[in-house]
Image (tube, one colour):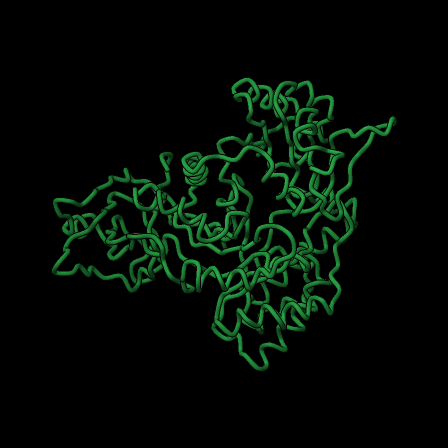
Length: 480
């Protein structure tokens, strides 16, 4: 933002339709940027040097003289100093509200060596008070390190000997030091009993501290560590958003997490009311319940109709257009048909009839009520029965005009891409292959990894289907 590019934190309207439209009751611009390089997208006026903003929207572009004429006493004026002005970047799938303990997590994103990563843990341990944990929760890959490997348990014990430590790799595995194993009760009834959990043991049959599992295990472990206070959650949200702003991200769609609506929104509201929410944050809601099997769709409907009534498209931000807007349910809609995208293990293939029942019984409720939804599904074997059932629903309750999408979809086939397009849906591509392709290759094959991405990108570009790029925090975000 201060090197040659300015990021515009406003809603972008087609410049060809922009006119200076001030109301008599509230004339003048809130913000004017002048002495800028602006590409308008309007062939009749391809370039401009200034723009005016009112209530979060660009409403006039033109020459410095024309736009500065809209200045009033309260107008904020920015001299761009001949820099290029670009729209803020939109991250279409992120989980900021899932990281309310951001301030207590060590971020290994972009760390070039394992040696430096271990040093970061030691530095964090020195400033971590008694009773708190040292944590790395996702956002990294062993293949990013020059050493091209995971840390060993001995290295982790040496780095953090005096505080509980958890280093989590995606939703695939976690590394726990001795103090963390004791606190969590590894090997006892206190440790979460989640299907698919595997513990590594040494030659003497003792637990090493390495545990393999799926999404539900690691969400359960996160609830067992000390939780931040309300104020700490708000502070974490501020710093997480500040990190996004550093990369030019001014709009995100938060795609659900373990803090459900309306609990998470209370934290966002604190920032919005104080004018400290520096991103537009439309949100998708995920209702996990209180543990054990639950009907997530029913919980979603109860939350938005009884607990805190809200309708799709309703904006909770007091002043900013689309500032904190409800965008529907997802990305997990039913725990029993969640396929987890753990590339270190064989694909989780859902029984087709179970997938069809889920769509007919639960997704149908969302379609009937015109609630937008996002469905996390990784493997084509699961996408096919999902679309089979959704096409049946569409025969009696047309999806036309309803926003819905498949999230991740790493191995979706060209035929299923075409089916999504015909149903008016979208596909959110995941960056996961950038972080975890080595694991995918070991489990599936190099040929499948290459053909999956090439097939997906080529067919998507040719198909005209709606698709987005989704990203982990601190990776460069792209929206198509």
